[in-house]
Length: 280
Image (cartoon, rainbow, N blue to C red; front, side, top):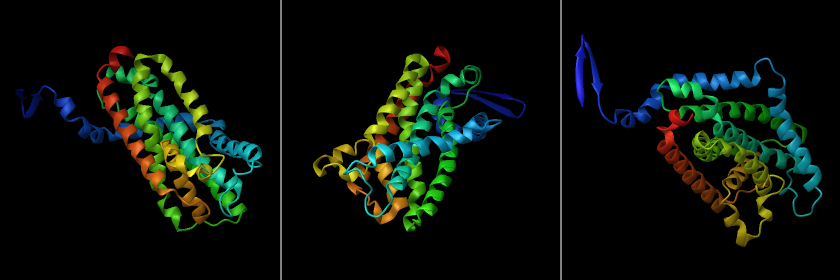
């Protein structure tokens, strides 16, 4: 370590200092996080109608498709007295939040290549900030959900107070793989084609058009390895209450999978972070 004094200011040059203070720097650069998040929101909604419309149309259209196609199939109807359309829309909210956040985070570094190549800041801020724009889409869709609950005369119960925890879980579920893929995307640009496939495939293997209770008991825990299974079940439980009981062992397993994916995503991102400026 080398220390020099210029006037009253002390300059400390220490090997590994950036690595040692990385997590503290995340807090120091919180204003940059807010600026990037606000920029993403402004780009999406400023002087445009399709941004707001898309946040409404996409989950609503998904609900209609699943209601028409799967709503008539025996065994894929709603649990209890909850309307099938409401059950489906309650599932599209976390899925839309997950898929939007995953897509935005996965391409975030490529979209900020000039910023990355010029100044130092914790690169983790960039993919994390993109989740804010996805959350705004979620809030718009949530208003539509409230309208549907009024239309079907289905009032929420006390479970709704737990909903913020499942919103956070859905965001974390997207952040883990998003960090890993965006890091790979810097070096291998063809990884950007992986996300549309994951989203297209995932919407059919997740319990969106059906209740996870239709899965045979001997396979239900294995099915919960899909982290969105626990998230969607939790959303339905919060919104529909006893009409959609939660499968607690599956929720615990889904939380475990989300935690492992988040740890792995952060680990891989940090391992590759020092080379971003070289490849970008």
